[in-house]
Amino acid sequence: MTRTKKIGAKKKMKRTNGKIRTLSELMDLQIAFQRVVLNMQGESLITLPVDSTKWFSYHMNAMTEEMGEVLKADKRWKTHRNEKYDRCEKLDEIADVFITAMNIAIFSNYTAEELEEAIAGKVKQNLKRIRGAYGSNNS
Image (tube, rainbow, N blue to C red; front, top):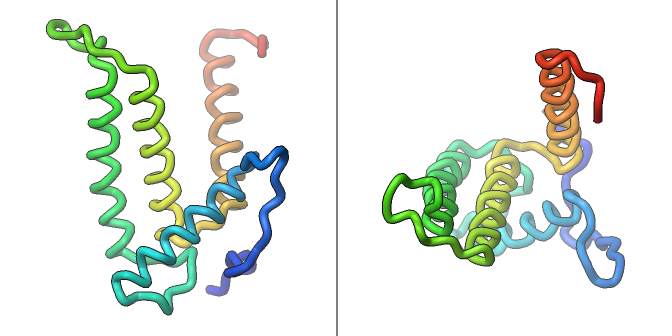
């Protein structure tokens, strides 16, 4: 199966005030980062995104660790010893979870466009379900 939207090595990103604004731009940066990692591992000939069970498995395991770090940054969910809450650390760890999710998509051979469509579709589906469950049409 051929992919029509492989990310080019020198693709330019559109930015507003120097800030990244889209999932596609974030994925482009993460693909560039993963190229460096792959090069360091002697796997520089891989075109990203790619279907790689080796790297998919690695990032699935990393996701478990990253989610645990979110919980460590905010222990208010615990019934005892629950004073710790570091808002900045929690945000940083949530960013790591998101980055790891992008890595899982990259090594599952999904493009940013496919991921955007899947996320948008799932959010709409969840909204439709919750509105149906509660009989509400409110936004």
